[in-house]
Length: 293
Ligand SMILES: O=C(O)CCC(=O)C(=O)O
Image 1 (tube, rainbow, N blue to C red):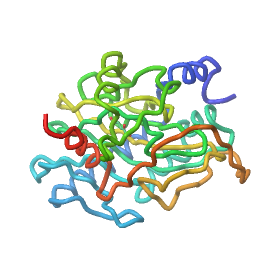
Image 2: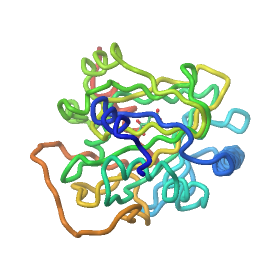
Image 3: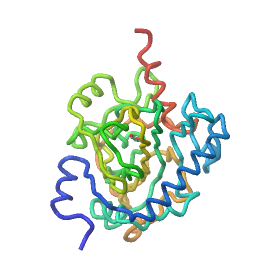
Image 4: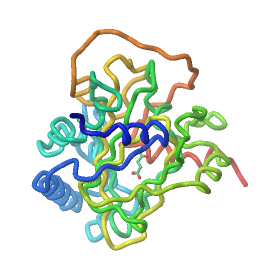
């Protein structure tokens, strides 16, 4: 039997997202939480983003205003390269089984990251779709957002626009600037009909790569840590370099390699690769792209 029921699969394809509880066991979750707590402790000793991923950019991304007393570690790039606990959640868990039920049987890994919103931090995510960041020959890609902490209405949950994966692919370039965010009118419309994805720790939100989504800052005293893994069908071939490159890109997670390419008919503006630790700096260009008010 698969990890998802027929009803759950149908709901995913209808809405573009699905929340499933208990995709990792309690001890794995504890290991991931402890590992992240250690990284936050270590971040207190740094004043700039640090560590390196395979292309030389920082692994640990600090929010502006971060300091030893109020650490604001907002992103860990490619945690699966430095943590067994995160690697196993990406590879061995029910989370990967669920993804295989949606876009399998042959599924490969693309990239991973942790997005963290510590209490007191300002991090927010502007509305966007993931596909224009990671265009492939077809759109059988799932972003799996695993809740390491409980996600509530107050701690900056993911917000999505149900059904938007069936609509247009929205540009992320505005006035010649790659902002990593959709145009203001699309964002406003999306926000007005947004649904929050909340759940207890150990739940995953499985999201179609074309679903419009964003999130606001953490207004609570509780952390919000999401482990985000992007998987694709094996016959979806990347059209641009990986924004979070990893030695594990292309690792077969389920099924087998066919060495085929499957394509769909679409046009897209290629993304700009980040030159700093993460896309948060690209999204900060959004204000600049609107020019003077
Ligand atoms: O951290 C979040 O709330 C959303 C993450 C996201 O949209 C992304 O990393 O593409």
